[in-house]
Length: 174
Length: 166
Ligand SMILES: [Zn+2]
View 1: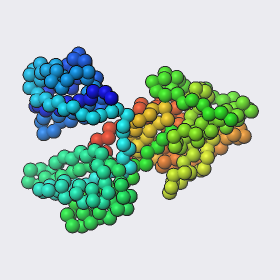
View 2: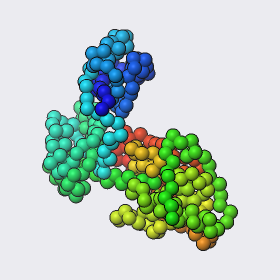
View 3: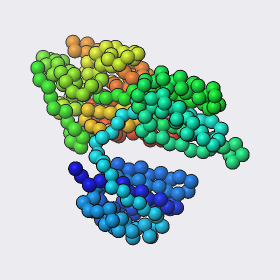
View 4: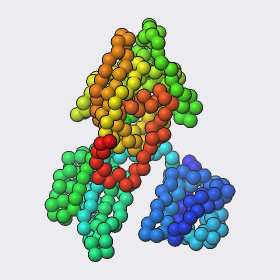
């Protein structure tokens, strides 16, 4: 069993964050696994799955210099993790509509009940400040089949006035 | 009968360009038989290309007939395949026997017209679409030393993307 950590970095977006953080990690003896890095509302967020032969404290110390320079907040958690454990999504769902409080909780709640296990979700707010629109895209596993999700989405579209689209992910292996 | 080992990336041989077959002789036929055995023996797949087992000749097998609701030509043995026409573009998820534990989105032509020799050495033309066309394009890429990794498109921002006709 390897020593895996999840490192979370958050700070104001600026050029060079990714290269400087990953360089500090590499020089400190950390081994990068899967990662997610994304700009959210002018901030940059990084989640790194890191293999490291040492304690969480010592890993955090090794990242402290780069975090000071880049004004990043860092958080280190020990995790139970392994590489090569991908779960393949079999469905992609897109939902958009006028932005309002609770839209994500409402829609994902209904979908979870209809059997969806969300593997990744990206959402954004577009439109204008007077008329914001919420846009959401997710991939997941349809635990109760795609028809169950379809009828849940139809109901959502009707009751919550959102546009929905569902398409199977038919992965080609060759 | 034999089941070959599949080359796994980063084996640099997967980047080699395969050569044309001049004659479909007994040794080619025997190889194709074993290539199909290999495809059926491994993880479920809808195609295989000769270079994936280390034989650098332009031979692929495609069979998408196991997929429900998918238009198809049954089992296709394609020797020296050549795509003469491509139309439309669709993004879909692909994985590869030579690239374990990773899948990604790849844009492919939606419909293609294809010419290839069959097992008897006769030249045939096929028109195909969708999943079958995707499988053929994936396998022909192997003949040119290309993997789906060479054609990845972002998972982000493909929201509501419709078919685009060029
Ligand atoms: Zn392949």
